[in-house]
Image 1: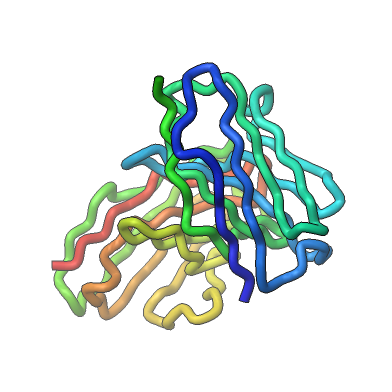
Image 2: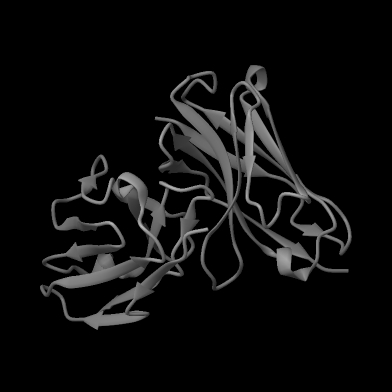
Length: 119
Length: 108
């Protein structure tokens, strides 16, 4: 059973960079059947897809965030990461990492990490 | 991008009843690539339904999905207290893949 775990600072200053890592266990990140993604959820609000990456490094980003977000993968260390630059209070959210199947279904999720943007 | 609108925003029903939650897309969802997720307080979303009507592994048959094109429905029969949650639809047919705003189901 694949498991995902997010890690990173819980507090980021405005205009700074939000950096998170997702550690994957119980499954191979090099499988051709899956992508790896990030989704966020502002407190009390809905879900927003951020970005997705394939084990080869081929990546897709939400157009609304594309200029600020980057995603990378390190299959040898069973991790993938994201960076979001120039953050504001609007980026305060629970950030989830998840496994996405070939078609687009997020079938396994991490528990999520709350990141607050505040000075 | 495709906008998904869920209704009702909140639904309150007693145990044993049947709940129907709607998800309407602003344009046709390719191949009926529509999923439903359940999210309980303090937890990550859990996949319930994929491909509009396929049940994910371990999901009881009380949960069923239907619909095609732009109109989809999640039906939960024989409601139990543990079904209280927020339910989200997600379309994965047209990039960027988008989520609905969520629908809260209260069992009381």
